[in-house]
Image 1 (cartoon, one colour):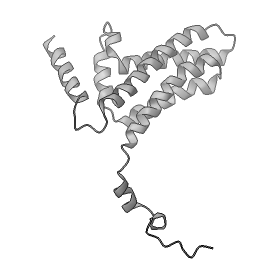
Image 2 (cartoon, helix red, strand yellow):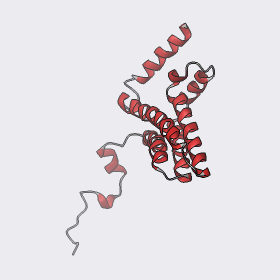
Image 3 (cartoon, helix red, strand yellow):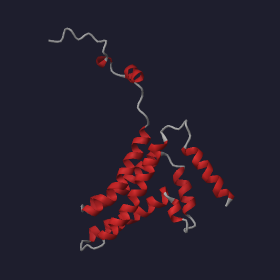
Length: 166
């Protein structure tokens, strides 16, 4: 129990680190959208099981599997009764942001491509949205104006003489 408490405290310190690349609310937004997407994909997956199409049934099952996996990766406290979830969560937290972006993006798009219905778009679309947020986080912060002007094309500089343009 003490090891779990120390793990939680180090995770809280990492989440509230003032030297982190992103503010705390951006990290919580990405995690919150992923958790919401997991639950919505499970909910809309249960609703979508009432279908007659085989491809839609496969898409719904993939959507529900993706939702359960996202919940296990982002909110391991929801799956405390499963022994190996803590190891998976630690592995997930050690991954880079672009890994999560790619995994969530693919997991969100495959069911939508298989069956374009409202329940797959709403369920898997939120998983895809969390992948997009993680993708933007992986790109990093935008540079300040001076750095962008210094690295930019000189033709876009405000110091260029444009008086001889007809």
